Length: 404
Image 1 (cartoon, rainbow, N blue to C red):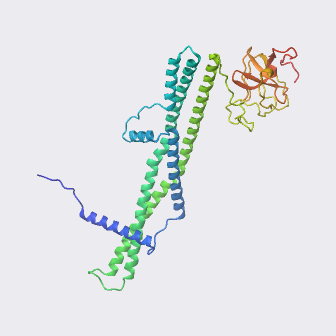
Image 2 (image 1 turned 45 degrees about the vertical axis):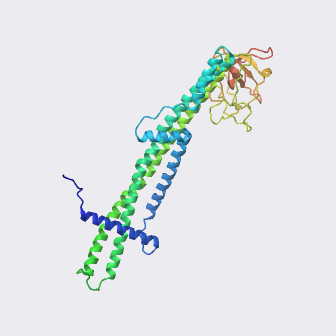
Image 3 (image 1 turned 180 degrees about the vertical axis):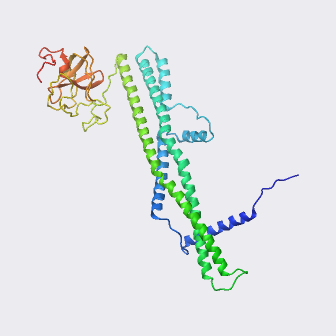
């Protein structure tokens, strides 16, 4: 019976064991403060400190983002295991999708021809869209943000950690050699021991020191180059962060679109208690009076702009386009026909189609060039020059010939 034993190099094994023991002794003496140690230069220490900070915060950011995307810790652990064994992650329904299915099923049982059943089905379908938006957001965020950052931690950062460990080993070897040289010099002039003169011991120790110093310097340069590359990695992380923000913006916009469509569908259902759509930009919740104008997602007429921004036919008024956001009561609204199409110049204005009828009221304070209009669920400024009032006899017809 032939047994193949590993081919051990006893000499290398003994040498490695001796080096390990020497490092342990050196590290122990450093901890006890009985020996000196080679310190890294300030540049290297700054780079190493920045690397440690980058590693710590990147790990926390990845962990926190994954918690936001997948709040259930059991699902996160399950996904992690499937990722490690390179298996497809299970397709599980989100809470929104479970709610959507139950609403649609309940609406069918209550009766699709009854107001409550119809409303349940409409809301369930909207919740399905929100669930799909959430699913797309989670997938996109993983691709554009968490996966690149985790790849950085598992790749470049692990390489830096490994090279820093090698450098620390080389430093311990260098300091151990320095101590052996110091000890050999102190023995000069003494009698030879075991047939080896103190001069020969010193020569060998100095030779080992030169080798250890060269290896330490080479490893120090390699590690410093890797540490310096973290600035490039952070520039890449900034691009990933921008992509994550863009993904969030698209996600919330799709959710807003889905809810606006749901409001319109519910209002169209009618019934004994019809749904009245709410205007989130004018519902009185914002006590400061700023209705998300800076976000650019709503129609807020309370924004000042330069003269002449209303388009053709406004006569180049020098007054600023300013208006408070009035509370629209039914007795304040008047019907007006749009004389010709108008493209909004910014988010404070409404897009108008020729011959469509909208509701308008005066701005507060009164603006000679603009009125405040309501177009379905949308609200914003509309130029007087494009309107023809329909309700009251005392209202003049506003055309481009008016001298404003």
